[in-house]
Image 1: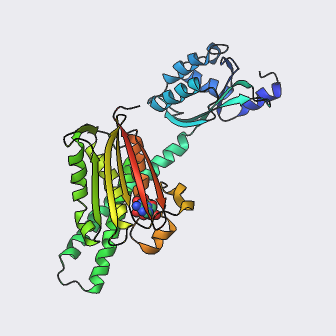
Image 2: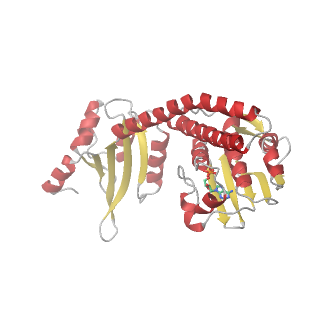
Image 3: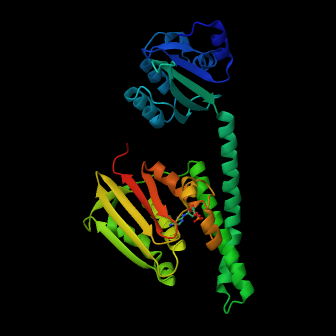
Length: 352
Ligand code: ADP
């Protein structure tokens, strides 16, 4: 396929590793950078040339520490020849190319015939290390801030007959405390400090327990709460209690926060094809259509809430979406401004 010396020279001078397969999915070319990485790991690139791609995938897999994402991509391209591009970060067993970003795309000619496949391996070790340093900094800073802020909060809450100034100081300190907690949670995710620990939990019990933590806030706003369980009272499911608490807690808290007084919140749970499906819906202010795509981004808050509700960091949904990914679940929502919002979380029984 590559019969042009100029093109080969260009591919060889790239900073990225490149692997090219031909139309039969045999390895056609491995560029200099990838050859160098392979050699570093005791593999001779010549050994792969002309052989089936699966041989390369298998050998390369042995160099990766956590293979789950990689396996998924390999499986899907075998099922779907034209899989356009998949972008994954993998951690390698050896230095100095500790982290690689791998992407792949099919090669087509102008008539859309399949000519083969291109794999790109990018060394992202530097960015990853910078990212880790940033997360560690946030983690240390928020840990250090936590104690003094909770002392301030503690003393302010003990003041009887609070003046307007003290009320304002307390509100500010509470906001600061929430922000610090959010930052700590996110930094725990970024520094890989969250371990999933599942045990068989009684679904309804757990949900009711979580709801009860919010009953005071629900009452304060005269919100009516309805629950609907399509499950047996004693039905169990393998769940990480702490993670579910964060996920459901955040959805309920948002539903309360973004629903005006006298509104309604509905919480439903059911088992569907071995998935636990939990939905939280409200009759609140909704999320504007043009902002919906950004709702799971870090620090994102929609315009309509910035006007009506000053309390919030825009971290909650980002955080829970990462947690949901960690437990291999899914989250989606539908929403209409001034009508309401429904968030649905699906958690699989088996890890896929
Ligand atoms: P926060 O609530 O701290 O602003 P989140 O990450 O929990 O941050 O939510 C991000 C944004 O998503 C919110 O600021 C709001 O714009 C929107 N949002 C989330 N839940 C709802 C809801 N139930 N109703 C309306 N908007 C919501």
